[in-house]
Image (cartoon, rainbow, N blue to C red; front, side, top):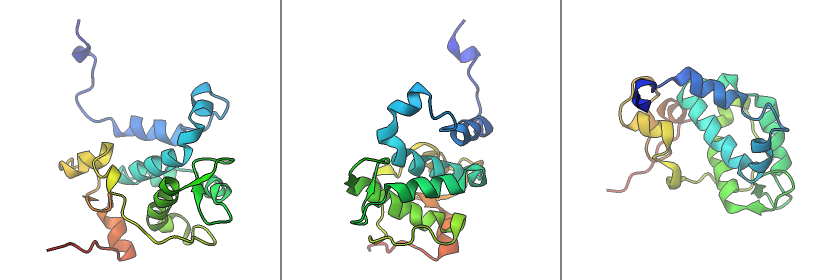
Length: 163
């Protein structure tokens, strides 16, 4: 028997959403402990893909906001996790989340010292790639901001395209 006989031939969005929504609920798990340095990136990727799947409401808003606040340093920079040094990568990711998550909490962090930047490095990842390919189960994604079009319209943000 080949593996293809047991492989799904459709995207199981509910299974993906269940996994992402539950990730981090077992903070003593070996995998969770070893992935500490990926925590802020995981929030970025997880919230983005949950929004693309229309499942953002399943995420624990208060816990995420508290975690992000605990990673902001006096200089305004954001670290990968609590106890880590601030880094430009996580600071930029938070800037992108800031624009997207205004819908979650109205205001996000009391003070965000950076400007909103485009993150071109994750334009073609996972579910966003499916949206760009026209998968009808996924919300349309703006390829410049790698964010759902409806979020960009709601906050009045559109890219300035070069001619």
